[in-house]
Length: 281
Image (tube, rainbow, N blue to C red; front, top):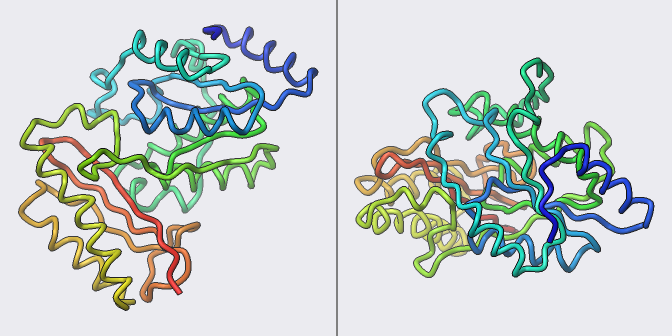
């Protein structure tokens, strides 16, 4: 596995791979890797000739007061895990290379980025879209792999790829969960032992919603209320509960078709997100 820090070096390698007709697959991450990330890497290995994993804690997607400085970083462990998985290139650019002092151009997604996460973190998806487009330009992937854990992020990236006519296939991988059902996340490490126990209410609430829909409930309002009741008294604060069309994240009144049920809440001061995706007749 080659470790590349230089933007120019990464671009030259990507160009060489293109000349050799090799299919490049990119897995963008912010590091602190867990089994969820490794599931993305394993899928990438099956889809392409060259697997590139980027690790970059992107400052532009963190607002003032968020956890940029304390975001988990485990570079030695990350490198060992990726080497074990057969990754070809680990791309770890420096922040001042991605965002030099005179940097002044951003990608601003439209309405789809103003809902859910965007309503609570107004500049978040501007930062996500900007850095992902920069990574696409540097790595020149044929395929990019994202996890459904960050569902809205994937929806925003798909829209950007379509709107800007980027020749990149976006592949989504289902959320990886721990044995207790909690979605794997680097931020889970912030939770106390008791907070971790309370966090089990999140997947339990989503499962209860899924079971209610399976039994015939089609009112999105009732499903939102059910989830909120399940979380009441367990989590400190619920930012949102959404029952939306899966590809546009437009809130539904009646549940049908491809549906994304998602939520964001806070436990121990830690903001956790989760979702499930259903196909409903």
